[in-house]
Image (tube, rainbow, N blue to C red; front, side, top):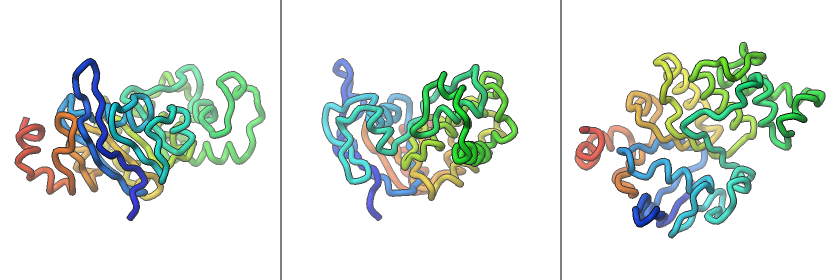
Length: 244
């Protein structure tokens, strides 16, 4: 299969500290890739470079047969890459429905979205996404009163409604209850095959549940890669991460 996303010899430094060092990896279309590693391994920085938040000092990033290394964040979003950060970012004074509506592609700003007449295709898409992220019964609930896990699902829904090709998800289950974590695992397994998912996560029970291919980073480079059973038995991975 052809890679939908590839990074080649990617490096970035901050004030002399090398956060990512000559990193190369590729992810296939509709793959669910999990990226793990100790704190400071370069996981979030990798996502930052893919989405355009951080510019690499070396190497290149290719997405969907185009180079995106020097594109702006908004250009990368329009190309089909959606990013969810560690902390949920929603409009807390607006309802779930309004949050999803604002995120609808070719959509409107915060104020104008409150005054336009909702068209049926938009309403249908909102209902579809709300069901997908377990929020159908909360469409009229303000985002600020949702549980932490529900806020995470809402933000994922705000990405899904834009129909991204690739979803970058940074520690999506941090702070969730066990029940919310289980439902998020179900969600990601359902999404795989419709979208390409790259998930950075520390919760190893969650990783075991969803992992197909795992990339282990250490000191900004790929330490190991493969099926979960393979990386769990890699002595280098045990020493620098799993054995801690």
